[in-house]
Image (tube, rainbow, N blue to C red; front, side, top):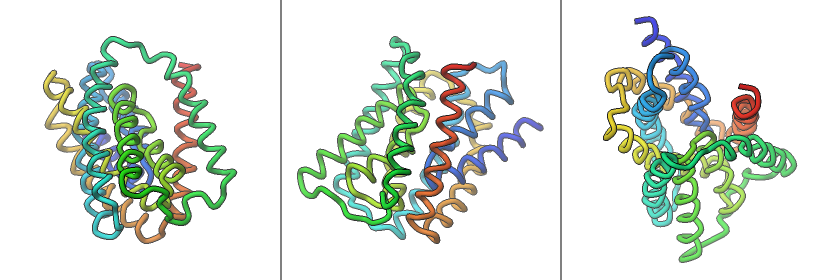
Length: 253
């Protein structure tokens, strides 16, 4: 079917973008809603997760072979992110997201301006915490962004990378690698909920997953080859696109 071929192309593009700096949902979610306008939104979101989680896993596997990660705090953050994602997905069933939808482009705008003003931000890798402090700080990032991803979602990867860079002192390459590990768990948490409620088109998700993995592998290799400066540039582009998309959704649609 033409729609499935279109979704494979969109999924490949999303995987490529997401592997470098997050934001794959900017491509894949609108493409799903455009291709299947009569399908329930929850089903399209669940199908998106069923594809993107595989691309995220493939990207994470490539990163961990080449980038040294601090696994003890990262494992705790990933577990907390999984729990936070489930909690966020549950809360969104009875709490409206309208206020957050309108605040999101403003928050992203502040994040972008800060990154542009600090031209050296994320170019050197100097972790700020160690020991128990690192466990608490990294765990807090995982829990907070896990909840956000389950509750609302747009820009989760970009927020993760920014917090790893600004708060934890990572460079953009290490931050992107760490974000992928946490994103696996936030995606799995949301996918578990969607799957249990029957909101996944599994065969379409499988087709998209193959393309998403291919895009992820290409994007990850580019990021590893060109380093933190390249990832920083991609981060600025993706956050700018996120601002435009979220502002349109909040105020013009």
